[in-house]
Image (tube, rainbow, N blue to C red; front, side):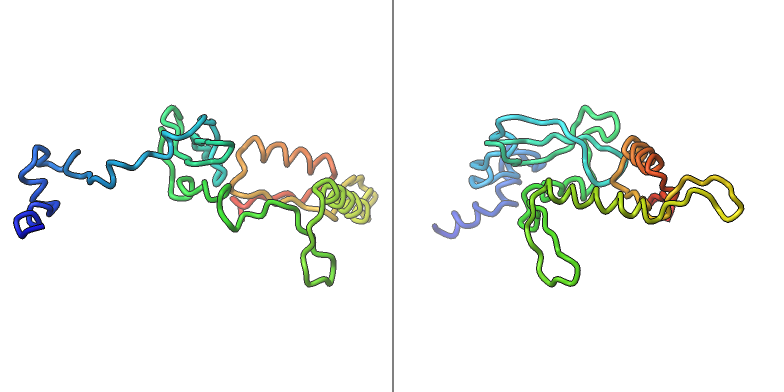
Length: 189
C-alpha cells in the first residue's frame, strides 16, 4: 500500500470524504464489524424473564440458542424499565454462564475442611430437619407470667434486596406459620 492508500485508510479521512460525514452509519463501521453477527440474531427463542438483582423487577429478554443463554437485554415492552437495565442487570448473563457458577449442592460437615457434593433431595431434607429441630428447641408456650406465646426463638428470617414484595409476603407467612417472630429484611438494616 502506497502513502496515498495509507492516508485514505485513516478512519477520520474516510469519514470526512465519504457519504456519511456525521459518522452515524457507514463511517462508523469497518469490514470487520460489518462481518459480525449479533448474538440476538442467532437465537432460537426469546424468553421473557425478570432481573434477579433487586426488587424493582426490570423485565429482560433472554436469548437462547441450543438451550444455552447467548444474550440478555432489557425488554422494551416493560412499563417498569422500558428496555433499560442497570449495569448489574446488564451483566446478569454471568449468573448463568459464568465459570464461577456452582451447579451442584455442596456440603461441609461440622469441623470438616473439605466440601462434598450431595444430592439436592438430601440437602433439602437436611435443611428441613434442622429447621424443625431448631423450632422445637427454641419453642416457648408461655412467658414467665403465664401469658400464651406460641412462638419459637430458635429460627429467624432475613430477607434480601433481590426479593420482591410477593416473595417477602410469602416468606413472612411461612416464618409466622412456623412460630418465628424474628423476621427482618435487608432494607431495614
